[in-house]
Image (tube, rainbow, N blue to C red; front, side):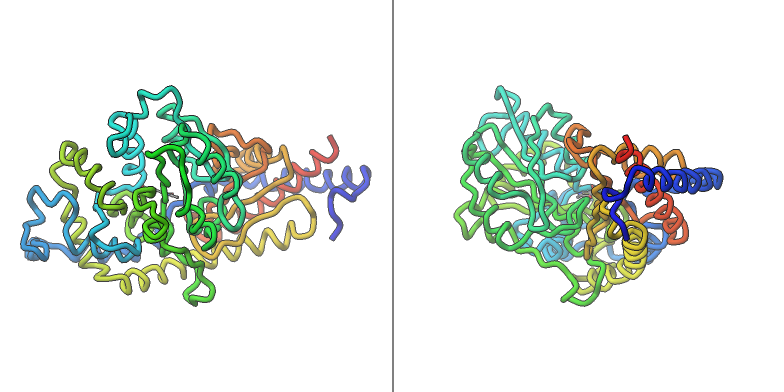
Length: 428
Ligand code: PLP
C-alpha cells in the first residue's frame, strides 16, 4: 500500500482519473442515504416497544410511597425512578433530580439559570463582562450551540484518547475567573468514542478554579452504551461526584444523564446528579418552573427496566444491533484507506460515533462530495465551537440509524470521497 504523499504527480493524476470515474458511477446510482445524526435505528426502537404495555387503565399508578402518578407533585421524581437513574449514574438517589424527557434541555436550563440567577449566590453571569467555557474538541455540536446561544465565549481544548488536555484545563481554570464551565462527554465521547482515564477524572476532581461558580458539565450520555458484552471489552469511567467530594470540591460538578438512547429519544427520562448544596440551589428554580415532571413516564421506565441488571440486558440488545454496523464501517475504512496516509479514525467500544480525521483542509470538501453523491453526513465543522474546525479535518460518522445494507453503501461512497478529495489536495 503506497502512501498518497509518496506518489509522483503522474501517479496521482492517474489515480484521480480512476477515482473521478468511480465517483461519477456512484453519483449515477441516485443514492439517498443518511449518516448524519446519532439516532437509534428503527430496530433499536422496536426493542423497547413492550414499555408501551407496562401501563394500562387497570395498572396501579401509584409510586412506592403511595403518590398517584397521574396527579401533580413529587418534583424531584418518584423514588424508584431516582433509584434507577441513580444506578445508571452511579450515584446515591439522594443526589438525583429526575427531569423531563431530555438531558440537553436540563443542560440548557442549567446554563440559562446561571445566566439569569447565578450559581449558589454568585453573581448572575449576565451581569459579568465576560463568561467563558472550555470546550474539548472535537465535541458535541449541541453543547456548543447552547453556549453560543448565550454569548458565552468558547475556548477549544484538544482531546486525546485519555480525555481533554488537562495541563491546559488546569492552567486556564486556575488563572481565569471568567471561565465558568467545561463541556465534557466523559464516556464514549461524542464524536471520538474516547473515555476519560482515571488520572484525567482525578485531575478534574482536583481542579482549583479561580471562579467559585465554575462547574464541570459532565454529560454522561453514554454511560451504559457498550458495544461489547464482555467487560474486558468495555471502557471504565471513574465516578466524578465521589472523586470531587474526596478532593474537597463536592459542588464542582453537574452530572447529566438520560435514557434517550436506552428507551426512546425524546420520550425517555433525564436526570441531574449533583451535591446537596447544588441541588437545593436548583430546586429553588424548579419549584417556580414546574409542579412536577412526567411521573407516568418515570413509572413506565421503572416497571420496564426494574433495575440496573434490566438496563444492562436491554443495552446488550442495542449492542447486538449497533456492533455489526460499527465493525462494518471500521472494516471498510481499514480496507479502503488503511496505510494510505490520508485519514485516521477512532474505533470506539461504545457510544454512537466514529470520528474521522482527514488530511488538513479536506473535511468540508469530503462532506460536500458525499452529499452530492447522495450521502448526508454531519456537517464538517459541527464538532467545533462556532462550527469552525481550524484544520478542517474532523468528520463525525454516525453509523446507528441506517439499515446495515444502506450503511455499507454509504461507507463505500465516503471512502471514495476521501480518496478523491485527498488526491485533489495533493495535486493542488
Ligand atoms: N449528550 C450527548 C453527548 C449526546 O450525544 C446527545 C444526543 O445525541 C444528548 C446529550 C442528547 O440527550 P437527550 O436526548 O437526553 O437530550
